Image 1: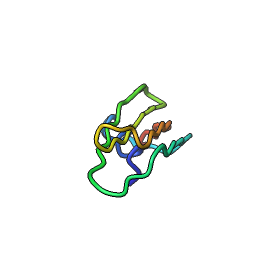
Image 2: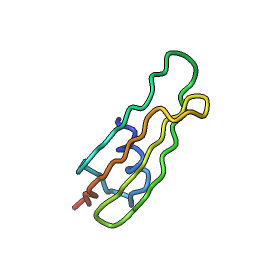
Image 3: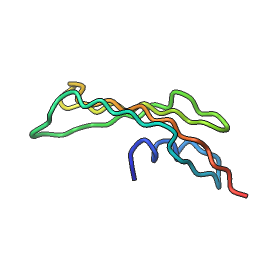
Length: 76
């Protein structure tokens, strides 16, 4: 599962799902070895839209940044 979608899913009410409206990823640096750590931050968690920003860092250096907008789909 795409990380932004998973992070949006974790902030949903029970029985709801999401679909992607927009996804933008900036790849800033290559990582050839070591560990990459991701930190996802919900920027907006609403009833119809969730926006999540994810930063990926290798040894404290920002190597990628994703902003994803998800539409909330409520179960019927």
